[in-house]
Image (cartoon, rainbow, N blue to C red; front, side, top):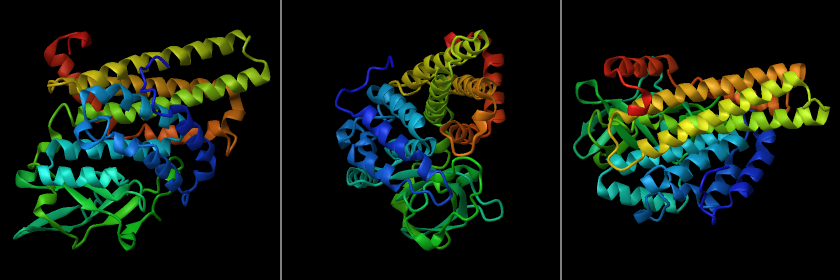
Length: 369
């Protein structure tokens, strides 16, 4: 890779260990606990904290943007389900750093240094959305979240509920109460190991200090839509792993001299490198000091590039390997399944529309964003 990676991080070791366990974890009751334990012991969870809090600033400071991008790509190559949990942790740590009051930030930093895994759970149950009410110095929650990844592994989740004028209010809530968690409804073909599902917050009592910022802060740019570069980095890592699996399979079959296969290899390689260059710019500029709100559009466009690259790789792998690409239980079939589902996150049509509106109204080339 061309990334400037910190030499004291065992990038290859972490990737190889998690990749070696990915096939066994690929089931609805799959256990990513050992992978989270590895990220914990290797300091990756702590690395997302700001440097003043004992971290490396991965995803929380400009100097940690490149390493954060690389970490997400590397985990995406190893196991997209593990990458999903780590991306949620990085996102949650950033939101606490941005909007938490000083005492909460200190407490969360201490918890993360002690190994806590955080997440961001955004999707409401349609007929039972999350809500809250203030009672003196406490906050009472109602409702539930669905598609909550990492049930049983995530210690604290950043969730949102309608606040003043309907604007989303961020709340940091403990989510380790097993009877409130229900993963039985998660029956997706991909990302099975994320142990996603429903978490019931009814009558959970928190302190008012667990509210993050003010209503509407969650939507502030460039941190809201601008942050999509993070999960795109995981997507890219998955597509890179798929590409490498294709190369190995073609080499094993002695098919790399075939002109049609070479055309497919080049199509994948150029798509992936284009996506990497886009995400590098997105990460560095969105996470840069005093980044403008307009940088969010850059990330939205980067998401479009990454999705197109991933779908190019999936299509070319199918064409290159034929039925072998669909052999159940093979690494290629698993990665394709996980990546196809992960690409559905989140509301891609709406994100494309928002980016197009900015391009039309500004009349500028993308290099001017």
